[in-house]
Image 1 (cartoon, rainbow, N blue to C red):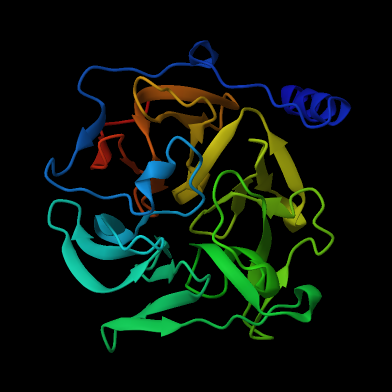
Image 2 (cartoon, rainbow, N blue to C red):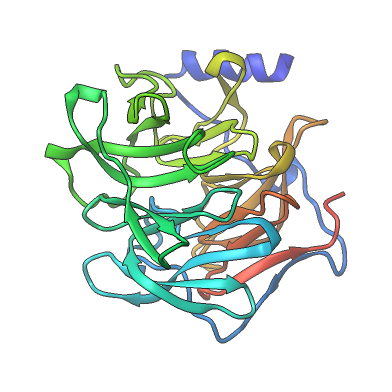
Length: 311
């Protein structure tokens, strides 16, 4: 706790400077334990792949219970939308529609956004996508959606990164977007910080199955929403965050490796309160809500899953 407070003070004094995570900050490595390719013939990851190594803001896949994966393929239409695949990682099948970003709630309900910023939720009764509401209390405008993260059930703990509809434009690079949460009583989206202050903007969201939000902003700062949604600045620097059961948090670090063509992967140790570097490099990351096991999209655009214990 003392270390965390010192990091917060230094961050404020230096205008938001974040200490980068390094391998010597803690390294996990054990023979036979780590990420393994699920199907070497798959090509997944979605999006305009030429953007790498620029940070790509959309989540390109999500995992539900029983390792059910929804992921964007490499087949992109040139406008930012990719075809959608679903199934166990070793047997992906094509599904209707196309999207720019996709994730899932812990109850296996995928949520997607297209390149026009329109959100959709999967309707299992008809086997296709249904539009989600877009009404927002921010500036009295409908929201333009770029990322959706679900925790708990589909709607009661669903968070999104949005723009004002009048400014809706396909974002590239590290662009801070407004954090909004779905209000199931008023049937609308609500900005958690309408003034856009600290913890009100982000580029990546992760939500635990019990609804605790983690966020990363364009500067690489990592935040966790504590009691009463008070943001806590965590140590380290990240590009993406994913969270599983018991707040088992994983991030992609800020340091793009040009040789490996990916970002390093770190796991948060709640007991030691530090990030541990694990073997492997990734373009995107998601965590299974039931097992807490991370999956990544590797630099060859393949799905990899973690095998073995963490510690």
